[in-house]
Each structure stands twice: as C-alpha cells, then as structure tokens.
View (tube, rainbow, N blue to C red):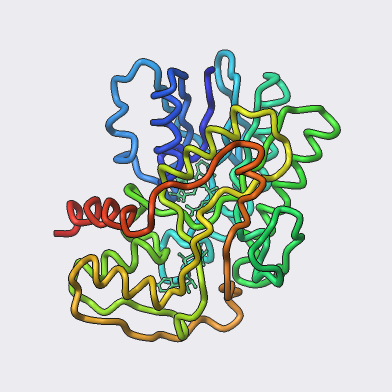
Length: 317
Ligand code: NAD
Ligand code: UDP
C-alpha cells in the first residue's frame, strides 16, 4: 500500500510511519509541525519508501500519485493549558484539524477509493457516566467547556467519517485511542507522562492536579500501534476502542514514576482547573478489539514506563 499519514511528525504519527514501512508499505507523511517535531522523522531521511509533505491539513490537500490508505492523525492532543502545545492554547487550529482536516482527508479517500482511518479519542466519551467505556456509550461532553474544541471536533470528525461511509461508501474505520505513552512524546507537551517523567528526572516534586484520585488507563505505544495496524487492515467500519484496560489513579501513577526514577522529591498538589472538564475516570472496554481484531495489549505499565524513562533520560540528563 501507499499510505498517507497526517500528523506524521507527532508522537503517534511517527511510530505509525515506522510500522507501515516495516510492513513493506510506502508512506507519505504530512505535517505542519504545530505540535510535532522534524526530529521524530529524522531517522527516515534517505528512506526511498518515505516521502514528506509539509502542509496544513486544514487547507485543500493534493497528493501526487495513487494513495491506497489514509490515516488522519493530525491534531493537537494535549489538554494542558500550561503547555504551549496544549489545545486550549491552539483552540481554532484544533477545531480546524478535526473538522476541515477530516473533510479534506475524507475527500482524498473518496477520490482515491482508499481505506480511511480516523484517529478519534476516548475524549469523545467526555467525563463518562458509564465505566468502563464501551463503544456503544454516547458520552457526557460539555459542548462549550475548555476541552470542547478537541472533544467536539473529534465528535464532528466521527460523524463526518460515518457520513462519508454511509453516503459515499468510503471504506472507513475509526480508532478511539485511550491515553497512550512512550518515546517521542514532546517533553513540554503537558500531558501527565512527559510532565511526571521530566519532573522526576529533574529531582522535582510531581505536580498532581486535584487530589490525584482521578483515574486513567495507560497503553504503551507499541501495543497501540499494533491495534491500529490490525484495525486498518481489517474490514471493520464501526468505532473501536484501543487502549490498555489496566486502570490506575494519578496519585498511584505518580508514586510509580517516583519509585522507577528514584526521585525523592515526592509530589505536590495543585488545583485542578475548575470547568476544565478533566474526566474523573477513564478505562476502555476492549472486548470489541479482542473479538474482531484478536488484539490486546501486552506491555505492562512498569515495563513501558522503564522504556519511556530511558528515552527522556537521553534528552534531559
Ligand atoms: P502529537 O501532538 O504528538 O501529534 C500530532 C501531530 O499532528 C503533530 O505532529 C502536529 O504537528 C500535527 N498537526 C496538528 N495539526 C495539524 C495540521 N493542521 N496540519 C498538519 N499537521 C498537523 O499528538 P499525538 O499524541 O501523536 O496524537 C496524534 C493523534 O492521535 C491526534 O489526532 C490525537 O487526537 C489522537 N489521540 C492521541 C492520544 C494519545 O494518548 N497520544 C489519545 C487519543 C487520541
Ligand atoms: N495531570 C496531573 N499532573 C500533570 C499533568 C496531568 O495530575 O502534571 C492529570 C490531569 O489532571 C488528568 C490526568 O493527569 O487528570 C491525565 O492528564 P493528561 O493531560 O495526560 O490527559 P487526559 O487524560 O486528561 O486527556
């Protein structure tokens, strides 16, 4: 296949590019570097199966030649307003990447008769009232809250993807990604994994927002990419959760990172922004992925964190 990957210079997009090349496919990477880094793709320079186009997906997209699959991953992804890469600081760009970027990439899929994958998110479930979250849950989302620029753009993107599937018969699929971590996350991204690891490696207390009793379920990037590859190459059209169902509180998570890094500075509690819509709990139900794709995660949290800590060590110490 010749695959167009938007957001290729980002954390997930760069790992997907690697996996597609490893499977023998050709990759056209597209990115405007708003939150991604050329460094994430530097190792692919000179690879004749990899081509890069610097472009904003909110503008009309033209890719010369045949495209067999499109993976739309371009979007800011960090909810942290303290980070310059957080979508609260890139609100219009985030809505445009989810809305116009999805429209433009679906247009390419229609014109090319290509398989299409939308990178959606557990955020479409909002602050969930159903736990764990199954794909049939409609969500509990504030349409005007601080996270709405991301959540509603992704919900619109899902609706548009299904419209192209139902009306134009485009061969689409939707992956609902739950919190994923690993090498190539941006150190200043503001999400909890880079924040905690960089604080721990600098000997600082880890900043817990609120009482730390909110939960997340963290998936190591290699597991996620494996699920994504299986979904892309399946005949599925319905949204599919991909994530690790092992749930941990943020407080417990901070303690694990301090233990693995030997950080003795402990933690500090900061206020959780009121009205930020920070979900209280999040855990995927992955029965669908298990049944339809034969997929489940394999890398345990501590093992994945050790690998991620090594990556950050090389950049911080
Ligand atoms: P990231 O910020 O590392 O990567 C996103 C990439 O998209 C960046 O390289 C950025 O420059 C690029 N981009 C953004 N807007 C663009 C535009 N208009 N035109 C071209 N390129 C643009 O984030 P990530 O964690 O790799 O997330 C990738 C995708 O996966 C996003 O769509 C995100 O919503 C989704 N997702 C990620 C997670 C996670 O835990 N990492 C969870 C749920 C969903
Ligand atoms: N969080 C935290 N300290 C930080 C960064 C994040 O306590 O320095 C919390 C945040 O409030 C949220 C959880 O960790 O409850 C996960 O945050 P992240 O930004 O990684 O993404 P989210 O899962 O909220 O989309």
